[in-house]
Image 1: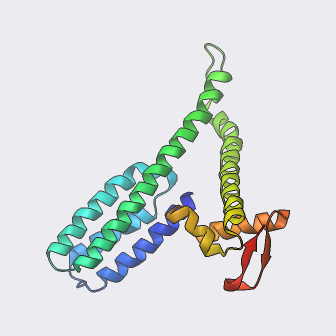
Image 2: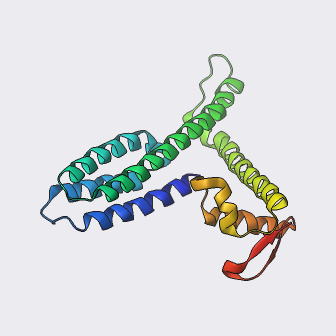
Image 3: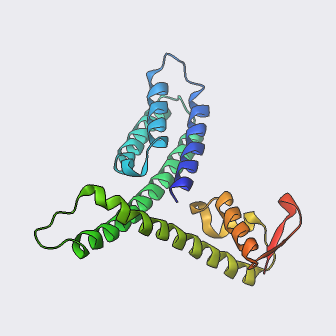
Length: 201
């Protein structure tokens, strides 16, 4: 899921760069907005807590730019909407990531440590690696189930049609990967080439 958040952040950063291209190079607001956007883009899963502050700072600077007629009302509205959606995705990912870590860490510490025994930090990555991998596989399984259900109900569909089911949370590339896996297992068939390709069960 974090890959989709990064992909979305990249698209919004590109839009912000295009919008601020009209600012004078001497305008500090131009560089401040771009730096904020880059900080959001370069955030890792461990930095998600500061993303909220960065996006709120971006909102304030965008409002300042809009009030000073640096950017049009339409561009301001689009950027604000997109950054709001990105922030929602980040917070959702942060909450699920934290819940996953809590669930993994709890059994590792409570279930394996004896009274008065210390669990070394270096032991944790070995215990955490497999459950995280399993969680990602489970997420892929849910997506494939959703795709199979949609194909049974709608009949032959394109990647774009199927990506539409998930909304902005899942990219077409992710849907394409899931479809390829389903085709490889024989659960789904395909016909046609490139953009004319349709998948069916």
